[in-house]
Length: 322
Image 1: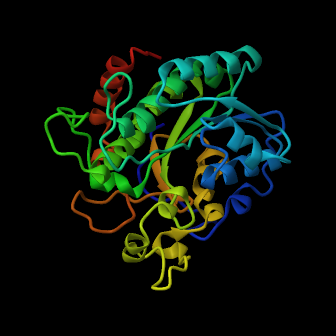
Image 2: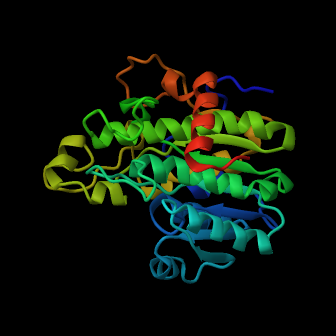
């Protein structure tokens, strides 16, 4: 069935942690993949899955950094992957499929923000190429195992999708001026739309898809790299530069930020559901295009016709089909 984009009754909320939402859930015998699963909310997601008994595969652009971050966590496998490199994606998928017949959880968590206009080897804008096209290709290459595992595919979007719908006439900023937040918003809108159409295609095969906003993560790579003035102006830090934790107002720790993607991946409340955008451990409220609030999902991120169009464009850009 199709799930309406409206909140349900959830015992969890903005301040819940990944440990909270996975308590009592047994993932023994399950295989999970978490891109970017060695830092920030990805690392907290990896810990939650591993502690619940899953085998967790962590694709890493920096394998040495991943090994250091994941040392001592049982049930974790690390393999090289660069989401902006199509050959790297194919190699990673081949290695996984040679060992694992079924994948039960795929969390497309890794993300990239480019402050200047950059392109991949194909000439595609780097944020769109990494955040969307890389995960699109990865999911496609793993499709047979995802079907075998009746998987949930969870893709991390952001409230940043409000900054920009996809400009299908100029995805790569060839004619318009480059704005990093508009580019980021476009890639995050793509993450949400990807989940809408993936769920439609996957539902007959037992594969369901979700997108989510994890919250503004105060101690993340994104916020740590911000100039201190910008971090203070955004409300992530006080006048003395100290981090502000206020989950009810979209300022979370990594443990809190990981909660919604872990909830999407494992909560029995979502059995039989899919194709929705979530936040604060619940299905998000659909809001108008001109909404000025940080939370809620805008129309262009959940529109099925736009999702279908993006799917066709993504197939053309990558040369990959499901």
